[in-house]
Image 1 (cartoon, rainbow, N blue to C red):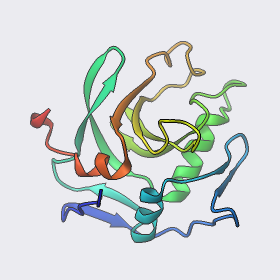
Image 2: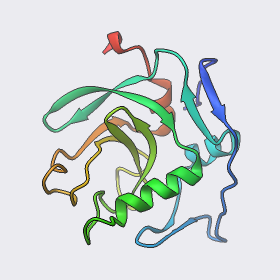
Image 3: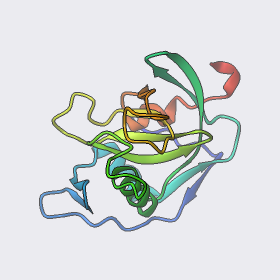
Length: 167
């Protein structure tokens, strides 16, 4: 599926991405090396991130406890992807991760982050999920809701953003 660029999106400056010889990207720490889906690599070659400027930046997240309309405020530049993902996996508040292994944070919403599965051995590889931002370890305290499926791919996620009333 090809990405349909919108005139209302502000493209952020490209941030260079360093690739290992096997095509993975070094995140370091608990995350290690990550194999980014091809759609995401293509996006990173065209822009550093996206900031929607109109009212068409909403989508539906399918959580276990029911659907919820969520809003994308921006798709992070790659430096922010590494920083946010590292913070989720290496909490300074407890000796545990707030996010499941195999996921990186690619975008930010009002109350949630948008995460992508980057484990090529997982059937969810490349899928985009909403995650209600939390500070407790995964599955504990304020971090028990889980992930809400938003789209089967990055392009489907961005192509399906719309006005809140549509959902």
